Image (cartoon, rainbow, N blue to C red):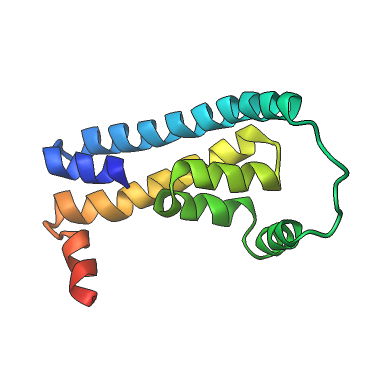
Length: 134
């Protein structure tokens, strides 16, 4: 969402806003996917796993999220939540980084379209409309 606000603030235009927002989002996805895996391995070396409980509260939440939304649902909510939070949840659901990146890319495209097309083509400010509802 910071990328969206920055693009709107600098009045870049439709195409540069798309490129910077979607490109920055997918760059963040790859950075957190690969850096997060390295940090996880380092964490496991420093703090070895103890005996793992099978039915924890976190496991039950993950199962409920997986059955309800899956990776596409998490990817859709990631721009609202934040890329690091969305990536942690998505990586806990599946280890397929390319599948996660695909759905995240589609999500960034959808959110950029919802924000930028009305703003630049029809002069409609989505943030003012949302603020007016509350």
